[in-house]
Amino acid sequence: MELILAGAGGCTAYDVVLILKRGRHAIENCEVHMRAERAESDPKVFTRIHYHYIVSGKNLRQEVVERAINLSAEKYCSASIMLGKTATISHDFEIVNTCA
Image (tube, rainbow, N blue to C red; front, side, top):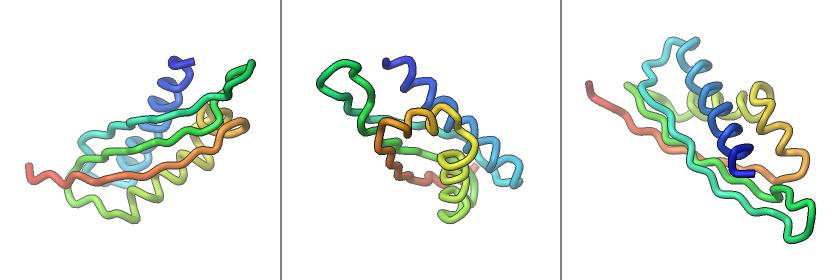
């Protein structure tokens, strides 16, 4: 089950990076930390998943990063959308603006 969760994290991180790069934003890194809860009885599917994004780059604006994350969650990341059929998914993010 952890591999499924890791795959969803990789999928959404890839989407966020791609969306920001296509928008010509200077993204340098994207990390996704995840917490999840599973059902107590079989099948022990995920019931709650929380994504915490750490997005690094130059002059990244909050609304641009938030839009990229929402597009991934609602439209592009099929792994997260599939998991959303059994789990309540939430997310938050932080931006690390770099100087270099």
